[in-house]
Image (cartoon, rainbow, N blue to C red; front, side):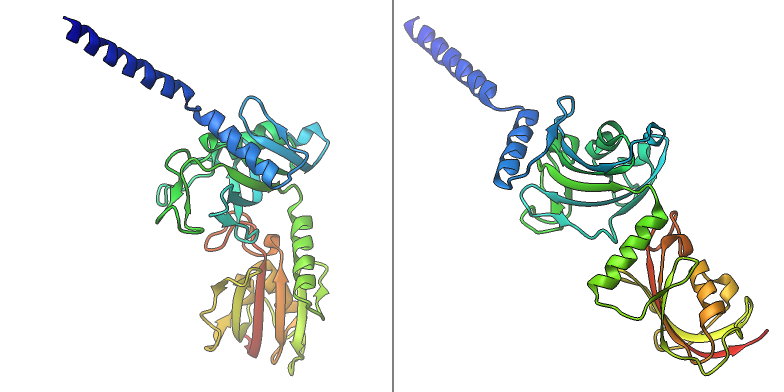
Length: 310
């Protein structure tokens, strides 16, 4: 009988000990908050406010003041962003590639092919915290990001291929209000950063540089002319999206080209012209584009070798 009582007491003590250990373990929300606070302290980040409902830390960097600009889930938005994990193992800082365009309510939807979706925390923050089109910094807890499983491929030790489990995220996000103004500033910044000279802004909004003067006559190219040229197309991060005719000439019809290229062909190009174009997204592939990120600024180099009429 004594043996049975002793065994029962041991089991009861073990059960109480296990319960105590479980009680001592922080919840994921507490864990996330501890990690974020440590990150803030280690990086001397000032000016953040904690949203007590979501646990998101945020700092509004700029925003409009008009209530008419309040962002709703049914609004179409263009978002430019950078993101990194708090452990620094995943960093995505290319603001040329990091674009999202769709309804805000679809931001966290998962892509049927890749399985990728933006964090629900990002969607909530833009709707609830930013309120007006502008920019802010966000520290999103993992329970509103990719959770315990993380996202990506390969080992969690790999850099930039995987967001580890229980990793909170550091976002800078800019909800673009005036696309034309934004594109123009990005082009100016690009010209300055690359120390480029000789570019002229056309009244339509694109920038051009004549590298080689034409042997033909400006104005010889019409909407339906056959323009023989070699050319290449890049994004401003030097990622090529059209290099099929770098060495082998193609025949182009201005009427079928994006507005920025078409206008430049008609106004600034003739046989013999070598020209570089920096084209804002509204004169390129626009917002719902395919093959390049939405609202991409385009860079083209054209070398025109011949012009004939249909």
